[in-house]
Length: 438
Image (cartoon, rainbow, N blue to C red; front, side):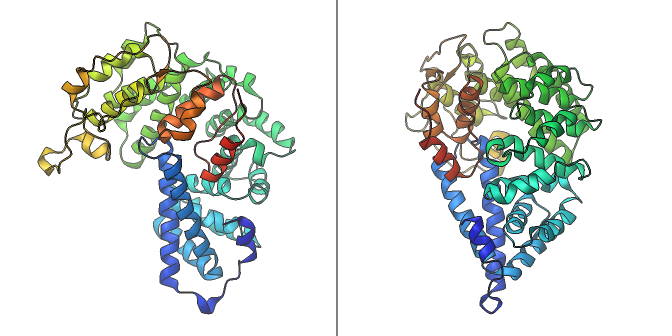
């Protein structure tokens, strides 16, 4: 479904519309976009499966669009009722494809602004889903200083994700970003850090490493890492410590958002931390087990493989530990008889890892340890191989999303092209087809 077609079919045929069917299209479109969005670090979803999600999502968006005004009203009603990022995504896509997008975007924003922490991610996703000529004018417009803070955040995150597609020749954005890096609102400073590398303003991030706001310091460190600079690793680690400590005083949705942010920071910290550094083992031991496993996977040092083996029977993370071991050494637990037989679990037997890691096999700890596999120490490893620029692109084609993200980040940090593993599958396949020979 192309956005051009969306605009051409905006009116629909009211006589042919079946509202219950359109409601199903709206709900399914929101569902499949949520699956796409959540898959970015999935150990089970690969690019081929992501393409299947996106094909179904496009079909349901098309089914909503052909219903014209009725489809739009049903999508808006779903957003007002459920207030989820998936519904915000559907409304944003439908609005951008309309003949008068401003009217629909205003109606969408009137709902999103009531709880942007829940719905803004869908607005960002919608802007990145449609053709650039539909999204770019609104992304640029929402960067203006008089715009609500949440919309400015959405616009800059979109521009950071797809600068080549959406920035165009708008040089005013460079000036606006420079001023945003010194903005009194910490939320906007943190957001500006995400866009700084894409806009060639990395040098400004060095001063923000000591920002009083934890998130700003963390995002400045991550921004520097995009340019292959690890100078902010220590600052990011302190931000991780502060946020981890603050979690004890959080609950509900606030805690969920903080845990999501913490996991993001840990992934980046693992890529930035010097391999073989003596502070890494105590750093791992100080983390909760699941964050430690996340760090080890992204860090890739074979010296930490024994730590993973030691947690193959952990009630909180056994399945995750098994997958991390498998991803590092390049061995399939199920195919090689290294997993316990799958069987239904009674509620009394269920462990936290069973609930948090659905779909991952439960490792047979003794069988895994009997393999006596080791990896090189002091160098990053993935799928049983030492990471090199020539090996990484293979993972972009065939690996699960979680490993594709690692490969994309390591390629970028080594001076290679940027690759967005969260983009629409057809954009990713096109980028892979055009991948430069190295």
